[in-house]
Amino acid sequence: NAGVMQNPRHLVRRRGQEARLRCSPMKGHSHVYWYRQLPEEGLKFMVYLQKENIIDESGMPKERFSAEFPKEGPSILRIQQVVRGDSAAYFCASSLLGGQDEQYFGPGTRLTVT
Amino acid sequence: AQSVTQLDSHVSVSEGTPVLLRCNYSSSYSPSLFWYVQHPNKGLQLLLKYTSAATLVKGINGFEAEFKKSETSFHLTKPSAHMSDAAEYFCVVSDLDTGRRALTFGSGTRLQVQP
Image (cartoon, rainbow over all chains, first blue to last red; front, top):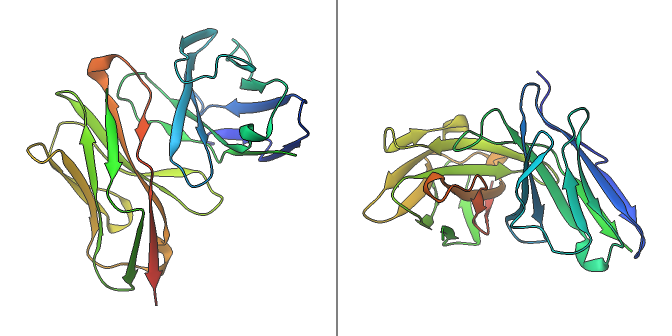
């Protein structure tokens, strides 16, 4: 059973470009979470999605960031008009159920904005 | 609101000696608590979790943690450190009572293991 897959693993964007980060949850998991880790810090929650629905986006910046989890295909975290402060590691996690169910993390995407 | 405080940002031990990584939490009546480990440039791996069953929780690689409600603590221990234990460790809380599914992470403790 493959784990949570994220791609690309490393992404370099110039300021003003768009970044698209993909996450394929574990097989059978329908709950996806996105977290951001700034250098030397812990992970911060961004958004929680179930298939075709955003359940909790309380951690998402109000502008430039969006997320989706379509009926078919991976979850996408999209950052428009990237700025240097967006440079971070972005982790996706998935769980079989919501609530207290264990979250399994992907290897992360390291975004560098030049 | 729930929160997690990891009391040490860095811990250094010698190989073969005990490991203690300290964590205090603030949460509602029924938190779930986790310890995750992150090796350099890698994703996070779950070490162990507490979900209101036994207060002493055994995890992978010889780690264990004890939930102490009176002290609001969930310290991580290992009797004998191995070089491969060198990594960043995160204490994490999830609070079902608030209805949020998101995990709240501590700021991390970097464990160094000296030969």
